[in-house]
Image (cartoon, rainbow, N blue to C red; front, side):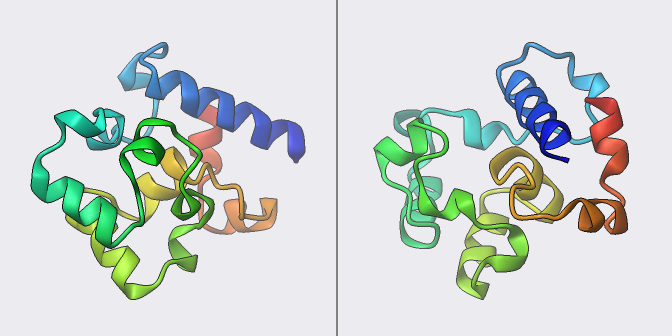
Length: 120
């Protein structure tokens, strides 16, 4: 399980950095999250800051923001609303931001995310 999760995290990072062709990954990369803070629309900055708790530093350095340690299912309604407002859904958040780190393997199987792993 740990090795598989480790491979998923590495693969997600490669996709995020465009080292893997987009058509080999089952989810569309959320471009907004890979846009530097200073290049974001002010509306997106406001949502990221007020609803998700990002700062310019935590936005630009992936993995620093507390919100990134939460799976979609762990978010408050306000956080979920903010994530949706900037273009995320449960699948893209849990894959590209949270990296399924709070999921048990049995949950990954139950939620049918195994195909995502096979494509990595």
